[in-house]
Amino acid sequence: MRKIVLGLAVSLDGYIEGPNGEYDWCFTDQDYGLNEFFTRIDSIFVGRKTYEMALAEDGQESWLPKMREYIFSTTLTDADISPKKTLISGDIEARVKAIKNQKGKDIWLFGGAELTNTLMNLGLVDEIWLSIHPIILGAGKPLFSSLKERRWLTLTDSKVYESGLVSLKYDCKWDTVETA
Image (tube, rainbow, N blue to C red; front, side, top):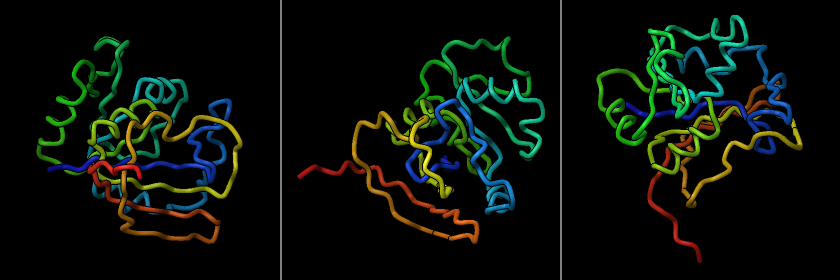
C-alpha cells in the first residue's frame, strides 16, 4: 500500500505560513533532501487554497517533478481544475483510501492546513517529514490546529544542516493515547 507523507516547512513555533500568508522565510539555498524524497513519490495532495495560490504565482510549480496532482475542495468543480489534475470532494476518507490502494509510489501531502488536519484526524497520514526552520514567526497559520486526539510518533530520521534547519522524519502510530 502506498503511504501518505506529510512533508513541509515549519517555523520553530509551529507555523507553516506567516501572518500574511508569506513563506519567504523558507530556505531555498540547497536541496535539504528534496531530490531524494522526489524519487519515492509520484503523486501530490493539495487543498484548494494551495492550488489557487500556485495558479496565481506564475512558475510556482516549476521546481516540482512531474507527478499526479489531487486537489481537495468542496467548492471547486471539475471545470475549475486542469484536465491533468484530479478533483477530490465528497467522501474524502473513501477516496483517499482508494488512491492509497492504487499501484504507484508514495503520495506527498503538501499543502493545506485544513487538508492536513482532516487526513490526520482520519488516521490516513503514514509519515511526517518536517523541515524546521530556525525562525520564530510569532503568528501565522499553525501546522496542527484542530487535531481531535493525541498521537504518538516514532522518530525515524533526523538531520541538522549548517543553516540551522533541522529535518525530522516520523512514522505515525494511530493508536489513541489515553490521557492520565
